[in-house]
Amino acid sequence: MTPLSPQEKTWINQLESNNPATIMIAIKEIRHHGNIRMLPYLFLLVQPATNPVIRESILLLVTEIKTQDAVPVIVDNLERLEGVPDFTRFVAACWQSALDFSDHLPAFIRIFAKGDYQTAVEAFSVIEESLLNANERMQKKCLQLLENSADQISEEKYLLYRELLKVVSGSF
Image (cartoon, rainbow, N blue to C red; front, side):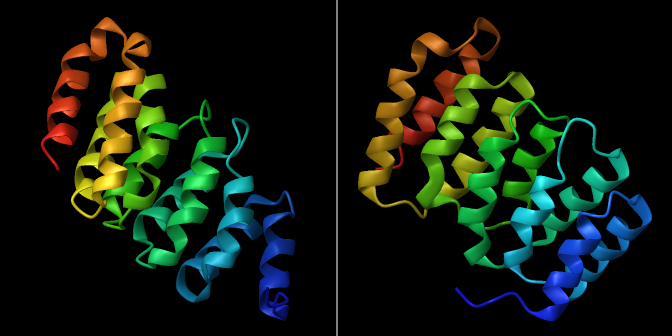
């Protein structure tokens, strides 16, 4: 891995500053001039006690990402964010970004199964959008994961679950 540039080191220092104004400046600069190497540092800021304005700025940045290389970084960090305020909105940011999450659909199946109704709706959208790009092996894996998670599905999400089963089983 390439060493961090002086600018990246500066951004990391700003993000770790505990000063909301300084953090916001860094986020703005990263949005316009940064790269995906900064994503893990941004996701580290997303905690329950994080200033909502900072969380919102990070959320907006994730929604605007158009670099496919960011997908594994987003998914790895997304799974860590479960239970954090705005988790559902971070899941929604995945489909809103229009990135291809087809190689990471099992993570969204787990989010669908474990999440509340709104989170499940957002995970459904990510799955539906990326399923067309998944190979047949991944599609079958998703169907198996869904079938195995049937006992985790709440009554509230059951109809949504049945619809997702149809979508996934009809994809191959």
